[in-house]
Amino acid sequence: MLARRISPATALLAVFVGATILRIAFAAATGLGNDESYTVVTSRAVALSYFDHPPMAWWLARFAAWLTGSEAPAVVRAPFIVFSALSTVLMYRLTARLFDPWAGVLAALMMACAPVLGVTSASWVLPDGPLIAFLLAGTLVLARVLFEPDAHPAGWLLAGLLGGLAMLSKYHGVFFFAGTLLFLVTSPRHRFWLVRVWPYAGALVALAVVSPVLIWNIQNDFISLSFQAGRAAAARFHPVMPLVVIGGIALFLTPWIWVGLVVAAARAVFCHLRAPYGLSRGAARSWLLVCIGCGPVLLFPLVAAWSPAKPFFHWAAPGYLMLFPLLGRMMAQRWPHHVATRRWAFGSAIFVATVMVAVMALARVPTLAAYGPATPRDPLRELATWSDLASAFRQQGLTMEHTPFVVTRIWHEGGKVGYALGESWPIACIGDDCRGFRITHVEEDHVGDDAVIVVPAPARPEDLAQIQSHFARLEPLVTVDLRHAGAFVGTVTILIGRSYSR
Image 1 (cartoon, rainbow, N blue to C red):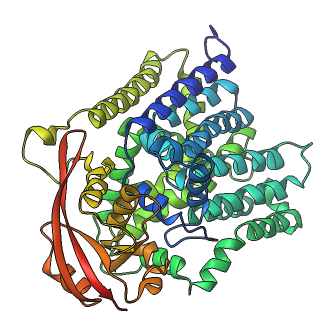
Image 2 (image 1 turned 45 degrees about the vertical axis):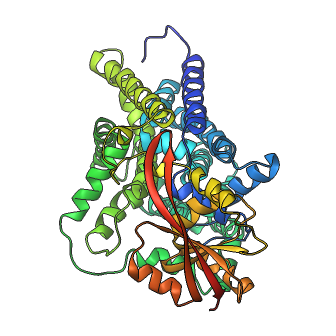
Image 3 (image 1 turned 135 degrees about the horizontal axis):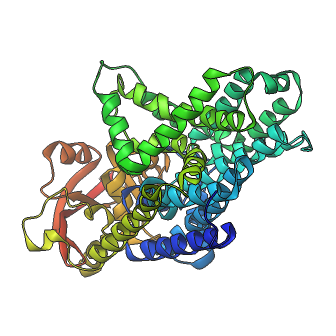
């Protein structure tokens, strides 16, 4: 056990307060990224679900904006910071219930130190924030039902509710149910639940919770499910891509944390394979976490081997989330006698805090791009707010009276433009990758109207030709340099499109 100079509750409080303060500062200091701007802009039209993901992130962003009358980064990110704080407590509670309190403290600490879980998903407008909280809450309830004799079987209903909320956050929530089924099938002590009504009743509760997503998909020809499934469509074999995806998620978690998670998971798998029919108390609990986490961990690297889509390393993160209790347990066992474990934990905390402070500083002062040639690889470009665009609109006298909507060429530019201009300007998209803007019906409402068109400069001829096909003519107006924190981040051209037609 750990040397107890302080109690687990005090240590958890330190992790909770430190992580939350850093996340609040990070959210306030940095502008919205591409995904965030797009989510905030498309959330202005409240719907049962949305093109990219189920609606939870959109609803949270819209609720925060409605409640405060502001779409400032700190405001729309606030609900996600609340969820991240809740996730810290839930990670502790889950690990403490399965193993012991000090393992819970270390699991919460290491989760906070993993950038993809403890920084971006914990402070940005992304569906992963609520997904993480609901996955942890659902697993916590499930652990009580499965491992505590005095637990009422109606807990399956609560687990179903929380799993449904996870699916209402992101389609990844389905892995909670797949993992639970895998555990029941592979754990002889718990297989009797397969012939009881309670797990199936919980699944029905989850189905009811996620029904808005199903209804919306039916109404929109399953466009969201088709979009996500299309990312896994077979194209050609890429034997190296699984390794690229694994390396990417290792970087997103930090390589040393990733190694710890893999080692902890391997130990749990070994214990299960060694004695599948006589699992000890700890081994069965570890196996539950492996079952729930293995889906994303294994599936997305495999899909990358044949998928034509660009791999997103963070897709596997919800699977690794379930391995943090195992890591916390392993660290707690080694803590008293291994100084390297203590240095590893404190070093991880110092590293992630330093990186967050550095990013906040660079977001508030001119970035390196301000002192040399502009480069599209400046990582802070995506966090820039295009406030110069709004100024250019005012200087050019552009009003909704004469040009009642704005046209962009791709989804993330629509997000940046829409966020910079505010809620009053409807945003449309004419291009090959418009995503959620494809179903906002802005164009339908403005047939025959003139529009303001915003495209990157220099505009590609094929983009202008595609946009030109929907207007009687295009009239170039002005070119605008975009700057953020003193750094040049890009140039856009503003045109007027006359008489829109579909």
